[in-house]
Amino acid sequence: MSRKSRTQTVAAPAATLLPGLVVGSHGRHCVVETPDGQRRICHPRGKRNQAVVGDQVLWLPAAPGQGDEGSIEKVQPRRNLLYRQDEIRTKSFAANIDQVLILIAAEPVFSESQLTRALIATHEAGIVPIVALNKSDLAQPFAQAWERLAPYRAALDAEGVPHYQVLGLNLTQPSATQAALLQELLAGKATLVLGPSGSGKSTLINLLIPQARAATGEISQALNSGRHTTTTTTWYWLDAQRRTALIDSPGFQEFGLHHIPPTALARYMPDVGQHAQGCKFYNCTHLHEPGCAVLAQVGQGISAQRHRLYAELFAELSQPTHYG
Ligand SMILES: Nc1nc2c(ncn2[C@@H]2O[C@H](COP(=O)(O)OP(=O)(O)O)[C@@H](O)[C@H]2O)c(=O)[nH]1
Ligand SMILES: [Mg+2]
Ligand SMILES: [Zn+2]
Image 1 (cartoon, rainbow, N blue to C red):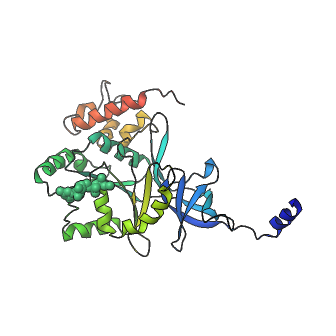
Image 2 (cartoon, protein in one colour; image 1 turned 180 degrees about the vertical axis):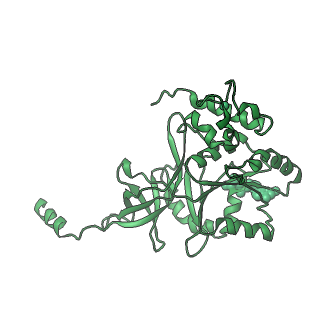
Image 3 (tube, rainbow, N blue to C red; image 1 turned 90 degrees about the horizontal axis):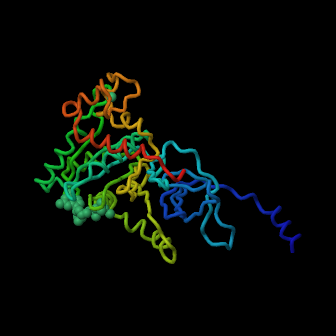
């Protein structure tokens, strides 16, 4: 018996690693899509091969007669990775993405702290953010929310170019102009959509990909039946050529930034940090120091609310962690 199986092992053709893109993440299981568009459930081989949506991987189909699932054997190096980190754990949103669309709405009222956290994490990961305020048809709350976004609309980068692209949307009845703008913004890119519950993420995905539910329902059902499922992230193609993608991911609500040192915050909040060159001390925290050029601008060039968020985050990220 043992001799026979050894002979078989030697005689069997070397298993070929196949390339794939991770398009779904359900706890530890992943859905991997092959270059010809086939999808299958894969399990990571070992902790090192824990893949996230957007990862390019090498995977192996199960041996004949062992079912039709596969194993992830290698995760290719990432161009970027967006994640959040609280005191205990790190959770990834997605890898290898081109931009993050932060979708908030006139209603429910958005949390400026969550928006700021998402912008900081995106900046730190080297990914371009777009802020979209949805439900422009709700005129009064929209006007108020748009006003709260004034510091974000006004923020300039070092070259004097607006730092954040901020746009208004009505996703239930988009105008032709809006629809065209959205298409143009997304074309040829992989865009991660983040936002609080109720902001219109599903509406956006169904608007752009009417068949999204049908295309993804089957495999999600397979994954959900009989298994314990945790949060899921899904990659949706917008076009048959598979060049434009939207990624829907939960987790915007608890956006821990424990991977960012407090002293780096000013860099990732450019409207706050832009005056730091003028501070008396090179290691100024912009919280209380004499001769702080940032504090001198609060309420003038820097919105008081943004500086308050900076100070709150600075305090939070300065707390020692007890979990290593
Ligand atoms: N008035 C208005 N309602 C919208 C708009 N976009 C989405 N909604 C509604 O907002 C609610 C939440 O939308 P949904 O897409 O489920 O949000 P999600 O939780 O982010 O996925 C739904 O009842 C949508 O019909 C909009 O532009 N205007
Ligand atoms: Mg939804
Ligand atoms: Zn300072």
